[in-house]
Structures are given as structure tokens and as C-alpha cells.
Image 1: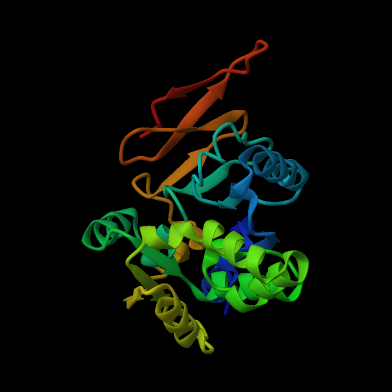
Image 2: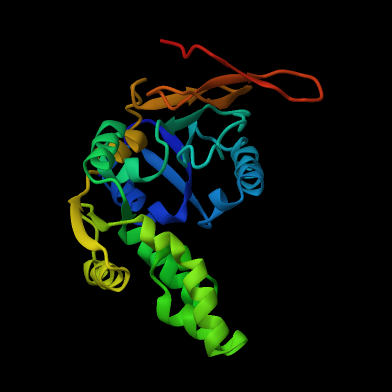
Length: 266
């Protein structure tokens, strides 16, 4: 495919690798990709620092813009600053918005079925690779056998059973497990895995058709203000309490490094 003018750098969470790889393969823009290890949102201070370092390192490249492949994610994006190149971010509380195609569909889907735990092909691949590396991923509800066996080996059967029950109390907060089946992605047994998780956790299995429209427009440079925020060099990212989700902020001087929100440009 002939590429149009437009060279972007994408810095994104590895959870969205299958979906981003798909839309980039169909894009008429040239997009260079750097995937970062999943889990930065679990420690937002360290995660924010790691992402800012990658933004800084990419600043000298020949990119028109940096596409920041993260959602607000526990306010992890708050305070990140565009350096040499503008940042382009989709307006989203978390990455489920990307796979459903819009923040409006995200809101309606959550309203229709509260208490749903969502799975995607990329997420399942990541937690599987973490399990093979001996890392913990119990919060996904996926790695029961491998992780429980490690607890038994380390603490004994009785203690392992107690620790497992305590660490998985969150399961009772959910009623459904939903697999988001994104078109064009190899689902490679993922449906069966989510069905097994649901049976184990006494959840009802649901399947939702995904939509890559938002991601496609992101890498194609179609950045309407309703769905995307453009942060100019020197400005920062700030949260909003409304449907915008994120806005442009200015980082003022002083010891507190206070971030003020100001009106997005029309």
C-alpha cells in the first residue's frame, strides 16, 4: 500500500499490540511503534515516569507527532508533558474504549451490564507470557493453575488455599466475563479460555463485537476534537470531570509543579 505523507511514532501498552498492529497494517501513514510492558497503571508514579522517559527519548525523531497509546488509567497520564513533538491521545478512561470503538459505546456497554470483566486477545496473550515467565497475574482471573501451584510450593496446601481465597475476593464483584472479539484479529482459542475462566469464577460468559474504528482514525491522523486530545509541546495532560475525560494543562513553575487545566482549542 502506498503511504501518504505523515510519519508518526506510537508509544503504547503491549496489551493493545494485536489491535494496533492490525490498524497500522491498513494505514496509509507511516507509523513507527514502541510497545511498553503491561502493568504501568498498577504503580502510576513509576508508570508515569517510565512513559515520560519514552516521550523524551522519542522527541528528537523525525516524527510529526507522538501517538500515546494509553488511556487515563488511574490518572497515570496526568502531568505527562509533550516535549519537542505534539502528543495525540484518545479520550478514554481505560483501553476498553479503544476496542469498543468509542467512549460513547464504552459508557453504554458498562451501563447495560455492570459487573463485567473484559478480556481481549492482546490481554490474554500478555498474561499467558507473564505466566510462562513465572510472574503473577491473578487479577486477570486467568492463571489459576500455574499461580496456585506456586503458592502451594511456597507456603503449603492449607496456607495456599487461604491466600488464594483472600487474593481472589474481587471475583465476587463481577457477574459476567466478556470477550471482545475484534474483527481481523486471530482469536486463537481465546473464546474458550474466557469461557473456562467464567465457569471457574461462576460468571456468565458474554461476547461483544469489537470495533477498530477509533484506533484506525488514530493512526490515520484523523483526530477530531471529540475523540482525541492534541497536546502541544510544553503543555501537559490534565483530567476533566466531564465527557472530555482529558484536557490540556499548563505546568506552572514553583516547588509544587501545579497543573492547571485550561480550555481545549476548538
